[in-house]
Length: 422
Image 1 (cartoon, rainbow, N blue to C red):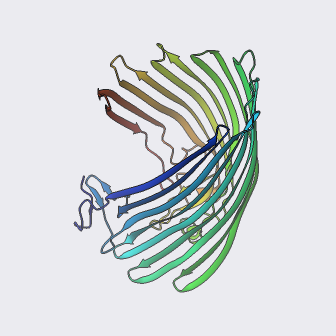
Image 2 (cartoon, rainbow, N blue to C red):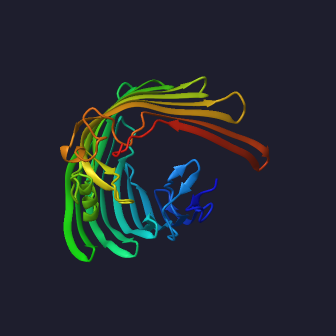
Image 3 (cartoon, one colour):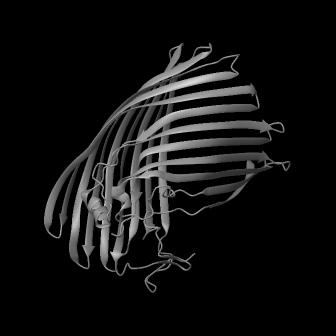
């Protein structure tokens, strides 16, 4: 389908080219030990942008002479090791990710905006998992992460440098965690409990120049949070599982630039460079069943999630400059359904997944609601569709000794999503 910019400047303008190369080495000098090393390089490039000003016809406008693009470049290095100690398995996973993404867009004709996001992340996880044949199963572990992310921005309005600078964020985090379960009544009833303590420290410096005036803003956010999980699973037979799950979770506070804070303030939305962490507690009741000799699999889940100090990204009236803020408290109640059917036609399988939910704000932050009319008490949660469905068709049939015919098709639909600007 043609993509046009201007009147028209180019056709098929927002092409996409992705490429990657990966090398993996597996080393197993003896039965109780194995190591796996991997190097992965990925590159992506797209002309102009995925954001269209019109769907029918599909058009991108307001670029003038700016030939926009989006691009990314990543290298991933990882090493995983496992050692069987007999009573337990000791595992280690080390990962280093180095990358850069960015784009050139236009906020108005001949007014380019350049954003770049160079970053790196190092993480190390160690885990000890039980191997015993008894009814008690457990694991304990720890994880350490160190990262640096830079947000470079440069906005030029009709030849006048409007704003440029960067926000550098450095993070250090660590966590310890554990989980244990016990098989009751020969494994038909299995209770499980888990606990995790997380420590996160984020520091940022925003250095920006607006219309020739430079300012430096230090910022940051910290999180010291304990989360838990409890589960009870019932297995009346090999073909049916009924379970109840409850747990808590969180997200560390987002760190953003002062320019993003200012863009929100321009729209009457008050936020800060370091947004507070949000929390949640969730409850889930579900079942998984195999019917018709394993040809039909059905999964049904009922869930309820409650959010505290929900943080989300918001559009602003400043083009291509989103911001982040604490919106308030919210809850989401819903139903998930999943069906997979191996049809009588050899090699043909059909799948269905669907969700229906009722998600709304219970309370709102007045400093945000004053500038975003769509955010209100008892109003819909932002960026959440009321329903979504997907149908999949897979066909796999041998057509020779070493050759298979593989075909798949899918179709999906979903409800609309409410944004903060309505």
